[in-house]
Amino acid sequence: MRKLEFIIRRIALSLLVLLGLSVVTFTLARVVPSNPASLYLGPRARPEEIARVEEQMGLNRPLPVQYFYYLRDVLRGDWGNSIATKRPVLQEIGDRAPASLELLFVGMSLAVLIGVPLGVFSARWQGKPFDVVTRTTSIIGVSLPSFWLGLLFQIFFFRMLGVLPLTNRVDSNLRFTSPINEITGFYLFDTLVTGNWIAFQDVARHIILPALTLAAYPIGLIARMTRATMLEVLSQNYIRTARAYGIRQRIVIYAYALKNAIGPTLTVIGLTLAYSLTGTFFVEIVFNWPGLGLFTVHSLLNVDYPAIMGITLFGASAYVTINLVVELIQAWIDPRISLG
Image (tube, rainbow, N blue to C red; front, top):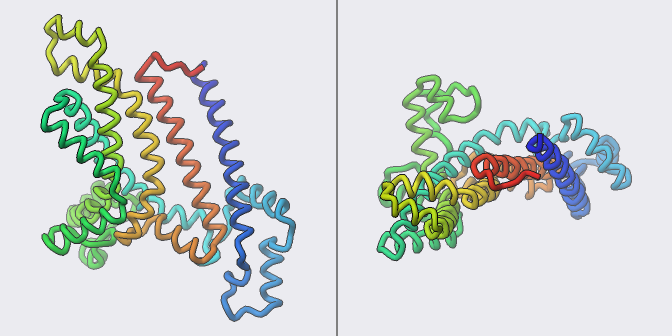
């Protein structure tokens, strides 16, 4: 019952956060010195046509009235039409979100699978060469800008070694040789379930470099946090007692220490997951990845405020949802955490 109350309370708080964010974003999008109606019609639009579109879009109404109608339409599932593409914003996001989410999932999976073991081994062998190398690599991974690291990967793996593709999500010739039957929009999953192994290999090769670029920052952050929490737990009395009883080192590390040290790491994973959702935008630009990042850049350049609002709400909703899930997972793993 307490867990249900916690979920309801957090959902209500998240809705208030989204409401406040929508007010700020809506206001900033409207005060930008531009005419959305003129952008919608093009540079040769006549004044009477601009006035007609302003009336249709409600741009001639007071700002609070415009926001009220926008919020009403959002609650109805109408996020407006993109000024640049003339298509519904929700449809634009739905078409591009799978590419970004697939990249995010692969990148964060690499970050967790690499970062957590690095932190555990670094704490286990504190002061040894492995620990020094891990800490140095973690600092480098956290410090390097993702767009610069992506360019380095392109130079090394594409130009120098020629083993991985430069940009895009799939090879342009794949639609003729082994076309992908899109089921979910997640190409790795779609090609796997349909048995299209040629396309699966091509998709996997294309996603390696952008996923590694995206994972560099989370790997360093997760490894450092895991190491710090593991060192703290390994110094506790119950760990010394377990070792004194002759319990195998592997059980002490993974069954006792890691379980109690993983809580702060889960928080970091959740925060970096939410951060990486927008961090994919830089990676997508470098690798010409057809996701939300390129759509966001084009929307900003075109002052496409319906698209900007839609992307902002989508990212904020994902952020608060991830935080809620992480807190529930923490409470499930560590009973010392109270949901009251």
